[in-house]
Figure (tube, one colour):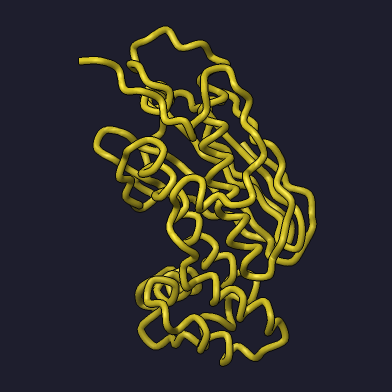
Amino acid sequence: MPNPQPNPNRPTARTAPMAPPKDLRAQYNLAPVPGSVDQIAGLVKGTNSEMREITRIINRDTAVTQRCMITAYPKAEMRENATLDMATTRLGLGRVISLIVGDLLQQAVIETFRTMVGLEMTSEDPVTMPTAPTYFIGTARFKGRASGDVLLAFPPPFERFVTAQILGGSPQDRWEIETIHDTLGELVNIVTGNLQSRLTDAGLPSDMGLPVVKQQTVFPTVTILGGSSDRFYFVSGEHSLGVNLCISPFAKEPLKQAR
């Protein structure tokens, strides 16, 4: 069976990842702006609003409401008599926004891997993510009114499968390490650029740096003073992907990587 032909919109071997294009959604056929962007915009515009108004804005989204409740009250018995007003007050405005941004990131990952790699990724409980002896870690940072870091962790041999799917060929081919790094970097570039463009639409503009890919023996956690860090886990058949989002919606503090 002949090897698939590379997509003209996808990176070619040994090509360094470029800065995200201005219209990512059009270039990569990504989904239109979701309603959660409007939710973030409403929260950003009303930074001095009472928590009751914040609750009204996010109450329309069942998934975000559930995440707020679970994050504010991790134990089920604590949630029995709790209300969303209580949860948003406990979390604060910045944390509520970061939870909605986390949903945007999950959508960006799923859309990007569907379009670029041909995989239907599903989000699973990050607690169930197995450890690997090594990872290909791709990161991209953004700084501005919203500052943060998106990290994708590819356990072997997923990085070779992704490279073959995008460039055409087989995972068993003798891929040069630079080619693998460039390909993974472009995926990180698209995921982070997609998220960044949606944050800009919501009133949180930022500048994005170029992605960096390296091999590590751990799946690191990146933190930011005054912000939050969340992990996500995606699966498609035998393939899995770890994702970490570190974000501070309003602060411009330096990011720190923890092992």
